[in-house]
Amino acid sequence: MSDNAVKTVTVELSVVLGRASMPVNQLLKMGRGAVIELDTTVNDHAYIYANDRLIARGEVLVIDNHVGVTITDTVGISDET
Image 1 (cartoon, rainbow, N blue to C red):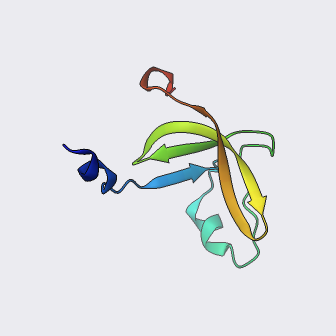
Image 2 (image 1 turned 135 degrees about the vertical axis):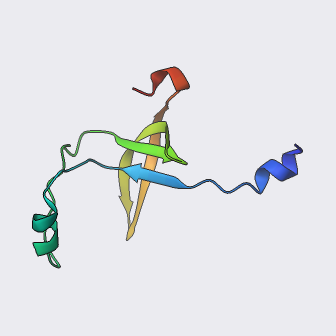
């Protein structure tokens, strides 16, 4: 595969800030402005996934009205746990 072919491949990126579990009926009762408490704190890493595979950890940034993530370390295949 040439370098040009690789540059056109699309990868879906996801950033996970934290997780929560709740019954469906509680979720259905939520409306605009509801708060879902996550199992993380503001000092914890965000987890960055490419095509559902963990690739890095990072910190959330807010600049003006934009949210981003700065990568603090990458994750190898043996580090994924």
